[in-house]
Length: 321
Image 1 (cartoon, rainbow, N blue to C red):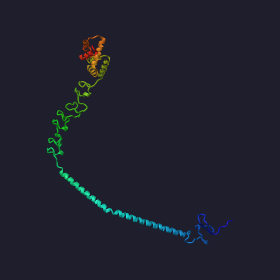
Image 2: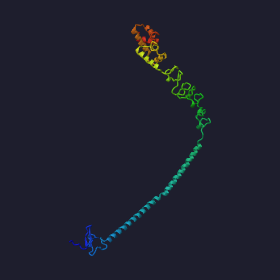
Image 3: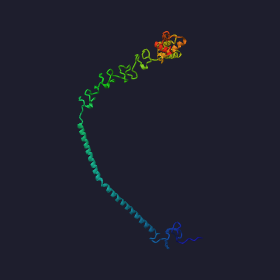
Image 4: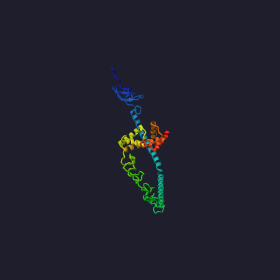
């Protein structure tokens, strides 16, 4: 059977120092290491490091010193701020003086500007350079006493002021309604800037008229296109004069096109008729011998190739006959 230890101070397993055992359990009383606890009970002598009262006294001392330190710091801060504030307040009068000076200078400048403007207003008098009774500001030509308004300017003296005259330097014309640079008097389409000429007067502009000199027609028909194709085929096959090709196209023994269509078709060809005459002359010589004049006659005869005499002569000269 284990014996219970008697009351007393024993090493504290929970920390340094000793703890008091009352014979039945551990108490809250402790003693620091190096201090001899009282033999008679748990109380320690007052003022010793292990005395709870001593710890409380130390804590109160530190608390008092912390409060005093905080108050001292606050007072010191107020003193510093007061000193800085005093320095900042001192320049205020100087700033005020500067503002007043600036305001004075501004007033002086304003007064000077007003005086200058007043002088300018006094000096600005109406000017009439050409002495026509109209001041320059209102005079269209301030240096020409004969002209006061734009209506007075008529360069070509046609009775139409320049600002209304489409041709201010040409007294014959003045109007150009469609602004195509063609006077209305010469413009067959005075209100259409795209067109200006209609030679045959059929209402179709020459630039759109396939027959600008024939008022009976203005468009290329299908028959005309066929006549043109036939004319090209004939030239590929044999030599023809202009008139001979028209006859071939319009003859009832040929293509039997209308004479108008045949004539139009031949007119569209870009053919050198002199070279056609040379070609025809060679064909004649390949078929039969000819004298120089006989060949010219054959080429130019109404019953022959119908070239002009000039074309026939050119051909004979070209082949060296």
